[in-house]
Each structure stands twice: as structure tokens, then as C-alpha cells.
Length: 426
Ligand code: S3P
Image 1 (cartoon, rainbow, N blue to C red):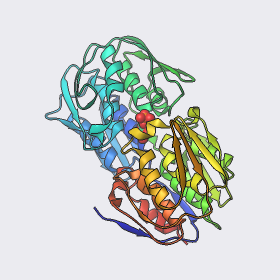
Image 2: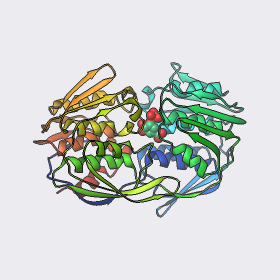
Image 3: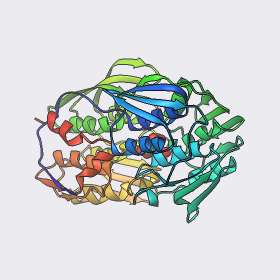
Image 4: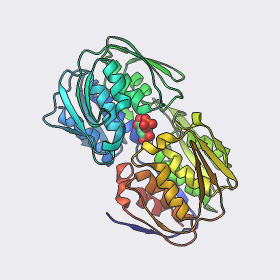
């Protein structure tokens, strides 16, 4: 585990293209594997989390080949997966475990899904409950934690009202719904990212979406497709915020996914006063655009609960933005942040307070009082990629040097983070 010294910089400047979207990459491999025929993927994200998804499907007999910039997934159809020879390892990837559980629920072999230290402490009851209602037999440690042993088979459709908004839970239900005869319906309190819905439709599933309500008709036959994975807006957010905060900065990020259920950060940046330009929009199965951002003075806002699903992975960097914006930012209904790779409310509060930020937590409300400067400090990644990248940006904007421990955790979603950042520093 190595630490890194981060020195303040003057500005970020330049043009870049970022690696593929993590959520879309997982789904492309999974849906490609259960589709009929080849799926050819351009720009699939190469990171620790996606490697776990690829390995799990290889363990179930799916051939996945990398050729040049393409990844070919040789789909074997809805029921083409083979019983794995051993335990399936999801690493610390929540998306791998939860979405794969939905697919395994449709198979009549028994399989065990295990995870690393952080994933083993993340809640799984949220998927065990609906998948069990559909007829899958699932055993979980302490009735709600990994490992999960799943024996599926003959599923029935359900009409499920989710108690929380979660794309992983929704996706697990929709993927299982492909295996149930009839219409499976799912509804969230507030709509979360709809990458699964878009991709299932693109692969030929009979799926309808209306606001936070989605239904899929099973059995669903999927056909392999060719697609290009857009750049990851979550990875982009660190640079977008860095460029907004540092005087004289101007960056352009090409071909980034701007799906409205995911790109709340773009709306929020504009609302806080950042100069964001969305250029060259195109829409294949996911909307994509080039984004330009320049330095601007930003101010605090109120972030209400319904905005949280569209911002969930960007909240760590939003804490940094709020800490350096004029006035007060209030964030409501973000308790899901405590259940990520680490408790991200705690990890950000701990680091940013060391840098001089004023963060107060009152029940389910977070209040950040912006200041003009943060001080360099000895910071901790908590082994969490997004905490690490967020505090790196805070350190670049601070007065004085900082150090951050265990920086390898960025490999979970963005192995080239530090090199890309160095390429933009001036
Ligand atoms: C994801 C959904 C979100 C997000 C995670 C990826 C996905 O999790 O935080 O990084 O790919 O569906 P929840 O569904 O738990 O909100």
C-alpha cells in the first residue's frame, strides 16, 4: 500500500478522453453473455471491478476475448451459462455481486458468490428479498451479507416497490425478470441510473419504462450487439470540479456519457455557478457529448433527496466543491453514502475537517459551510477509490502539501487517474 504526496497546483488545462463507463461496462459483459451470438464492445473499462465480472462469466463457460481495442463476448443465450467449477468471486464490486445474483436467480444450478473485505460488509438483503419473492432460493450470511448461495430456476414475475432507490437492486430484479414468464414490474422512490433498461432494450428485450416504474416481459430473448462504451461521467467529475475550482483552468473531456439519470453533476455544477458547456451531443443507446469547463466562482446550494440517485457516486467530490464554494451547501437524504465501499460521509468528513472544512451532520442532513482555502493535511483514502480521488482534488486546490495513504485503490474504477491528472496540471 503506497502513499502519495500531493502538492498544490495552479490550474488544470487541456483536452482528454477518459476510460469507459464502469456501470455500462459491467452491464455490457453480463447482458452480452446471456444474449445470443457475439457482442463486440469498444472502449470497455479496464479496471479491477470489471475484471471480476469478466472472470465470473468465464468461470461459467463464456468466452470473452480482447482483440486490439475490442472485447468480444461470445453470448450463449439466456440459459447458456454453465455451473461454475468453484465459488464466484465478485472482489469488492457491488455491481458484480448484485446484478449477477439477478442472473443466477434464473439458473437452476447452485452457485456461491463471495466478495472481498469491503463487499462482505455491504447489505445484500435488498436483493435477497425480491429475488426470493420471485422464487429463487438464496442463503446469505447473517441473512443479509455475502457470501450468497443461490439456486434459482423457475421464477415468477413480481410487482415490487423498492424501499430505496438503487440501480443495482432494480437491475437485479429486471435481469431476473428476463427468466420469469410474464411481466415483472419494479418501482423506485426516485429514478436511479437506467443503464440496464437502455441496454436490455438495445439487445431486444421487451421493456417499458415510465419515470421510476419499469417493467420487463419474460422470457426475454436477447441478441448480441456491437456497441461503444461512453466515457465515465463519474471519473470525469473529478476533473470537472478541479477545473471549476482552480483559477485559469479550462479543460475539454471528449465522448462522455451524459445520461440524465446519471449526469446530475452537470446540472449541479451549472446551478452552483460553474461554466459547463455540453457540445457535440449524440445518442446511440446512451447519450454522449463533449464537455468543456472553465474556472468559475461557485456558490452553495440545497441538494434535495430526489437529486441524490443522479449524483450518488459524485457526492465525495461534491463535498470538496461545496467546501470551496461561497456560502452554505445542504445535502439531504444521502444516507446510502454510508453503505458504499466505505462510509463515504465519514471518510469525507474526516479528511475535509483535517483540511479546515466546516461540515455538520444533523440527522439525515449534511451542512457544509464553504471557505476560501483548505489546508494541506495527512489524508486517508479509507481504501475507497472515490474518497481517494476526491481528496486528491481537494489537495491540489489546498494551501500546502498533503499526503494520501493507500492510493492503489483508484484501480477499482480508474487505474490511470494519477497519470491523467499529471497530464493536465500546469
Ligand atoms: C451502480 C449503482 C449505484 C452506484 C454504484 C454503481 C450501478 O449503487 O453507487 O457505484 O452500476 O448500478 P446503488 O444501486 O447501490 O445506488
